[in-house]
Amino acid sequence: MDEVSLISCLGRESLISSHATYNALGVRGKALAYRACYEDYVLRTLGFTSGDGTGALSLPVVSTGDFKDQSLLADIESEVAIINLFRASRLPVRVFSEELGETLVGSIPQFFAVIDGLDGTSHFVKHGPFEGKQVTMLGIYSGVNPSYDDYLFSGAIQHASRKLFYSVKGSGAYVEDLRTGYVQRIFASDDFECLDEKTPLSADLGFDSWAGITVLQDYFLSKLEGFKVVDPQVSACNYLGVALGVNALGFECTRGDKKMNLETAAAYGLVKEAGGLVVDSQGGSLGSRNFLEFGHGPGEHFPIIIGANPKIVRSLLDTLNA
Image 1 (cartoon, rainbow, N blue to C red):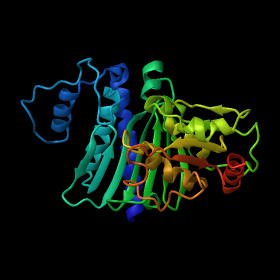
Image 2 (cartoon, rainbow, N blue to C red):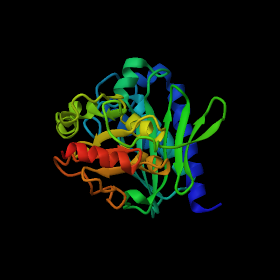
Image 3 (spheres, rainbow, N blue to C red):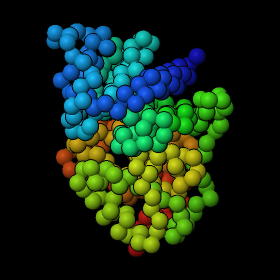
Image 4 (cartoon, rainbow, N blue to C red):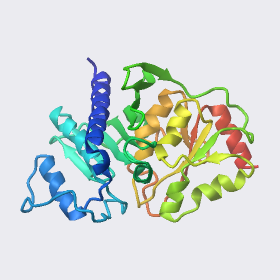
């Protein structure tokens, strides 16, 4: 089995493992994790030792988290499940995840992974573990300092629906129903050509609100008056909507120094393998952009466009620049 096939199998198994962990937690996953305690717990879970070993992960105290966000059991343990599988598989990988920050597996990493243990935490809190759109996201790249086009595997598992969305470099994008085992290839739509008021659009307005910025409002919505732009409330759905052929365009922005661009890195390959594209505000592909450098500086909230095809992206840019 070649390298890409091995990585894709591991990526799929990792997301399924995170789903099993999520289901086992159930409503306990809503518990807020106390930062000082969960650090000790995570170190011990990953096979290290630290402190006096008395930490517990069930104290209902708000955590500030690595990126100053709320940390729930479901967030943390979904990430731990994936990293544990990496360790068990002896994958030499450099991992960046929302709750655990940077983790090195193996002495000389050869791969790079991004994990969002639970994208849509607020949706999860509102709807519970077995309803809603919250997902776990994973992207695996070649090398330890990759550009976006270095992706090998991209995936997201939607826990309530038990659907696994994934792509393998050069082999397309797929959705698998874990209840039935049915696998179907997915495609972004070529039918969207000219932007008009009926064109299905989505935007991650929740991040604007969370970060106290107005990038999406200023760059997109203010110039698209009369257009229906839906906020899916889960960043992953901006990418999935385009990859599934449901939406023509999705609007995101880079996270600056407050969060890493984990969702973009995890979903980039999925959109591309489905036939779509992810570009900057000028229409330039993110493919050659370095993940660790692009959009991670203070105040670097750059607009990102997720497009079903080049024609609809060009139509959008013409409208925005009119």
